[in-house]
Image 1 (cartoon, protein in one colour):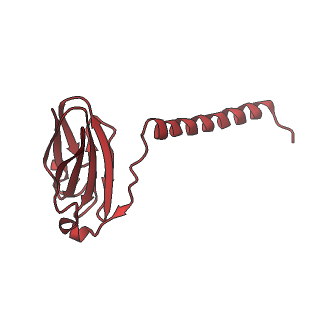
Image 2 (cartoon, rainbow, N blue to C red):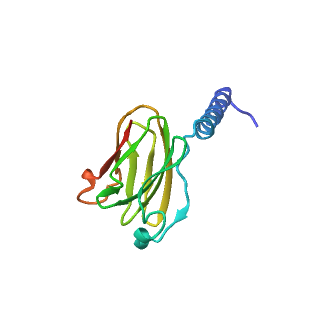
Length: 155
Ligand code: CUA
């Protein structure tokens, strides 16, 4: 097969770019822990309030500077509403929706997840800097969507 020189140059360059992008993505996912949240537990969304652990939403200490926040999302609220943890804590969020698809985004961090009804979503975030962090719903969920938020205070 006869190949033009320019063709070879472009083939090599595009193959190199594909390899570079794959390596970069792999590095971000495995070394930087930037993979997509991909928990696959399901729940009967009509019985969220009766199903553990969502029958008792709240903040639970699970270790030294480790907390679990069990949280339910519904139109147009997060439960629990105000969360407080000490600086340096890693917070594991266990989330589910009681009605429609909601979003869970912690402003100024990389944490951003979709919370569809019928699924249990799990994300974690380490909070080093003290301050007040805003948690927003970023999936349009109805007329009160823009007022759906909660906060996490790091002290
Ligand atoms: Cu919940 Cu938008």
